[in-house]
Amino acid sequence: KPNQKMQPKLFTGGEILSQLQCAGMVTVLDLMQGGFPSRTAFQELYDKYKSALPPVLASLEPRTFAQALFKALGLNEDDFQFGVSKVFFRPGKFAEFDTIMKSDPDTLAKLVGKVMEWLVKQRWKKLAWSTVSCLKFASKIRQRAGAAIIVQKTILMFLARRQHKPRYLGMKQMGQLQGQVDVLNEAVGTLQKNKDKFQKLVDAAAASLRSGLDKIKNEEGVSRDEITKMTKELAAQMNKDLAGIKKEQEKQKLAAEAERLKKLAEEMEKQRLAKEAEEKQRKDAEEEAGRILQMETEAKKAAEEEEKRLEAERIKAEKEASDSKLQKKRDAEAAKEDAERQALEQERRDQELAIRLAKDQANPDAALTDDAKKPV
Image 1 (spheres, rainbow, N blue to C red):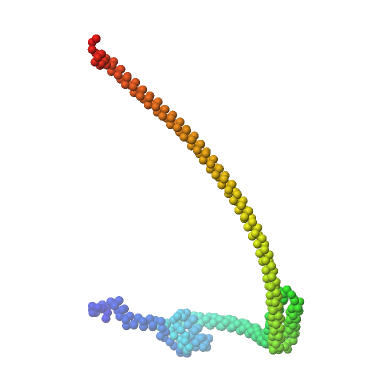
Image 2: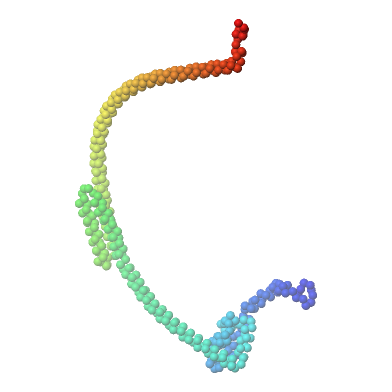
């Protein structure tokens, strides 16, 4: 419905658009806009416009004719799509294409010129791509030739490795035994006695190892079993020699340890005797030092007692002198106080006398006694 008021000739755009969206009309239109509803076969398109084109274009294949025609018309590639046997157009584009093809002869002549130009460019591009393809093909041929050489080298290397693998593995095992020879030499070097005897064994093992290596290097027909047997025999002989050397080492080590312990015991006995003599000398020195210390202590004690006595006498004398001085000071202070007291007393008497004299002068009769006032 066009409106909610149910009135004629009144349209509400928002409500109508909402109804169309709910009905799926907008989605259908989008689908139609994005799709290619118009289609036609290459052969039908070729047959329809063949009569309007010159013989140069009319002799092309239908698919090439359609491609040249669309490029010449300048149609957008988004407006059409090529299939296997048909071409598809967006809505309205086929009608536009048909209108252009049925235009005036001058426009058609220009169209033919554009088609011919596109054909020349396309042929030039094909020629260029053909040249590039030939160069790539020649490069691939050269690469395959190099790859064939690499394959040949790899096969030859594989055959050589399969032929000589037992020999170089045997030489590798022999090289590992050379390290064991070095271990034997180091072990012989640590021996103190019978070194020449065991050095001959080591030299014999080294000579056997060198002869085995020479045999493997020079004899190409030596088998893997022979090399393994030779290696095991040399390893067993070297292990046997190493065990003998280690046994001799242990024997010499025990003898050296016994000799060392004997010397150590003698050295410890010497040290014990020296320590006892030193301890005795130390005790004598300590006793002498104790006696000297006791004498020094007694002398120091007597000196301290004398010093205390002298200090007591000095303190006593100082105390008597101090008491004498204090007594003198007290006597002086007492004499001074007596003098001051007498002076004050005299001053008081003088003051009283002065007051009495002053009163007598003011009232002479009052100064006389009753007996003095009586007439004679």
